[in-house]
Image (tube, rainbow, N blue to C red):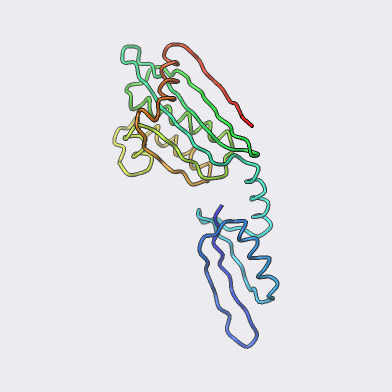
Length: 217
């Protein structure tokens, strides 16, 4: 977590002076507070994160402790395949992260019925990914990869979403993503780079169910 320090410097005989720092790593902020306190000239202090939330020193320490135990280096991939004859969609997602100095990966697929298009299948796959990220209780940046230009640019707010059905999916995804309260980075990749999720989606359409959550030393 990055924190901006807004503080007032006080010294007898001169007017108080207010300063605002750049955004700094939370751990560095705690070190600065400890050092600044020794000067005896530290007036009012306000700590503000990149989402505009304010913190006191105690709460920041507690949060950083939880953050150190939560998943980090979180990356997610998604893909959706659509069968026009059955109106079924195969969804595939893949997540990697680090926790307690161990690497973890999650693979999962499923089938959804009565969808209308491949675009809807892509949004449904991203919705599935967002649900899994929410369950992981992530507390640091997340990078989401997808090979659908419409979805990636739509969710990144680069392109408008005009279809009402797709807009409904996007709104549900936004709710889950915003509830994470962490920065989300959207990355458009090639179909070749997304082969793992494409295979999971195809397997779902073939009736092959996969759900794997593993770790490695």
